[in-house]
Image 1: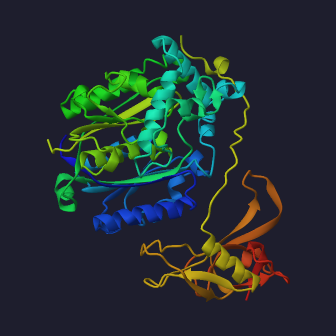
Image 2: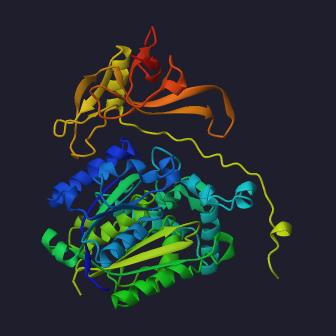
Image 3: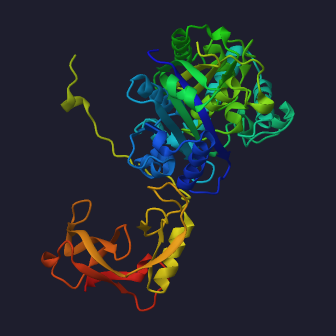
Length: 367
Length: 152
């Protein structure tokens, strides 16, 4: 990279019902970040917002987001995808040399304002899939889950175990809301069956949430904090629409991971942890395989924060993964801390059955 | 083979019925405004730092980035900041009667309020003219309490 760039601070809020309008939720979140870092909105060179019109319930979803994040009369742009793309965009803006600081903010209120599964209904090909009425986010995930279990010769018990581990980890993470201390596979197996083999306990929770990341150039980062987490590589890859690919062999995450690792100058096996946006339990092993890691992560801890099971607010989710990597790399992850975490990978996805994947590799050392 | 759009392109009519939302809003400024309207008074919230008066009032100042909660009364008279004469609806259907909609800045407020101006030939409406709110006889505490605006 032309410049060294780091994540300097993170703030997140996740809830089943945050009890505030999006505008107030964003104002309180971002104001608390400014206060914690000891800066004001004047110190932000560019704002990158991340939200979605369907989720917001009106077009131009950022229209009521700019003022609450302090972007009044400032340089601002929006990404309508997962937060990892927004953070990548902010990175690119700083690498351009035109900006020293960027505030990235993603949000949605899928817990209380709208039903998040419906967003995928409206992503379906309008003249085929939507009119047939068979495909939706859950049925597509169920089809993907069956294909995965059949290919690997596994039973749904595997899904119960994956979900239980994530839910138990989420209970140790104060930024997650959907944890269950000591969750067992039996707990997950007792949840309602939705689209066989998927049970409620295998699926991401409906979430009101937002995440803000302060990203800065090397010079600025060192002035703002003693403990930045350095962005070392990014990678992204998009596959075809849902029925035109193998949904178990996700090549796009493999390519995204390889591109980021090449930029970072490391191998994916050097990672100490991965924070995955596995929205459904079966997607975790699919993503790990795509990244060339064993099903238990091997040397890498897998989503120690509880991953997407602890909270999954669309648009904010990928930023939350980056925020969790930041916490790990700066030694501030509390009860979820991976000792000596040096390299971490954050993952975000978009589209039915992970059509589009993006990753960011970060390190504790400057490199 | 080249794509022949006359032969190959088809049109299919489909609707995009988007779902129901449970929108949340900042209730404070809306309640201040609605309660004031019941008393035939325009009420906003003022920023103590920059002095801007917002109608309806938000919970924070967009400019100063601080929480605000100072309720102030504004006049129900104001100035036409801009207007347009509606001759068709948004789909292009002509309207039987033309209507003047205007952005009005109440005296004492810094934000604009949308309303319709009656009691004047549409061709005589001018930017900068003074207008006043015409209230319903019995107000209910909602935005419908202002029936229309008329020249002062």
